[in-house]
Image (cartoon, rainbow, N blue to C red; front, top):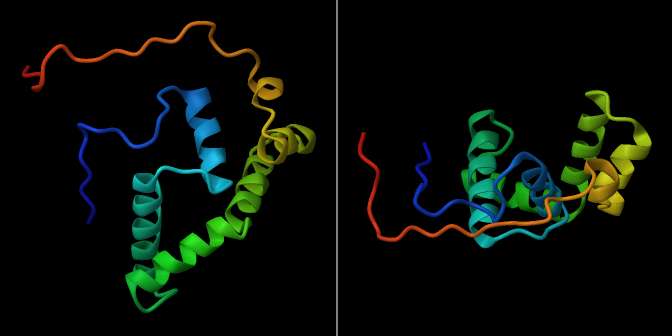
Length: 123
């Protein structure tokens, strides 16, 4: 079982389009250390539970290698095509990383919102 803190979100993106972009960047090896740790440890755990590897750390190493050697990106590319994305668009998205051609223009303005004080919301 894994528990993660929810007071510090993983990654940099919030919102469907930019979360997909961040995911593809992760598949290219550009990820925050916290995401890499969660992905490799959890993936290692799943590989151990399905008896693909003997230990969670062995599985984590295999997951990291799969991310680094491009196999994870290749599988994502195949998966989105199996879900109906045409080959040209899948290539633009996964290999050229030409997000604008797939998603269109990003929002002109973005906002950084910070809490005025620490704490939590009680209902």
